[in-house]
Length: 219
Image (cartoon, rainbow, N blue to C red; front, side, top):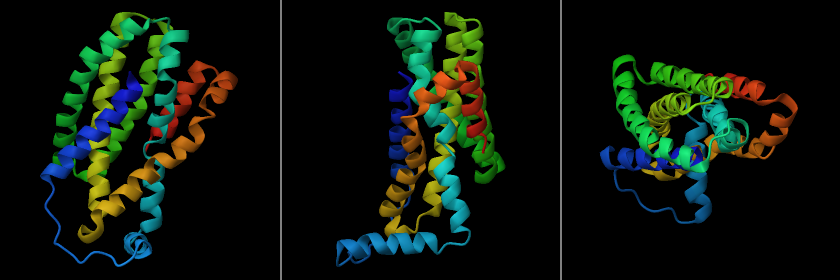
C-alpha cells in the first residue's frame, strides 16, 4: 500500500545515496556517547541559516506524511476499492511511478539546481493530494491508476531531492549522526500530528482534508 511505498522510497533512495557518496575522511572516534551526539548537533546548529534549515526539514514532508496515513482508509471506505484492486494498481503503476520519479528528480535537480528542484518536487507532491479529490469525485480503476502513478512519481522526485538536501547539510566527519538527526526531525512533526489526522478528517470531510494536506505540502 501507499504507506509501505513511502517507506520503501526512502530506504531505496537512501541506499543509492550511500553507495554513490564519497567516503568521508577517517576521524578518531568520540570518547563518550555525549560527545558523539553533542559535536554533530553543535556543528549542525552553527551552520549559517540553521534555524531556517531545521524549520524547512521539519515541515517539507508534513503534507505528504499526513496524507499517507489516511490514503488507505479513504480508498477503501470512501472510494469503495477493494484491497485486491488497490494492491494491483500499487504493485504495477506504483513501482513504475517510483522509478520514473527517481529519474525525473535527478534530471530536474541537475537542470535547475537543488533549491529549485526541492520547490518543484514539493509543488508536485502537493498536487498529488488533489488527485485524490478526482478519485473521490469519479472513483474508477482508471482514475486510481492515474492518481497512484502521479503520486509515486512526484513523491520519488521529492524524496530524492530531499535526501540530497539533507546530505548537503551534513559535515563529512559526522555525516551519519547528522543525517540520522535530520531524518528523524523530518518526520517528527507529522508523526506527532498523525494520530489526530482521523479526527481532522471527521471534522472537515474528505474534500477539505485533501485540500488541507495539499496546502501543507506546498514548500
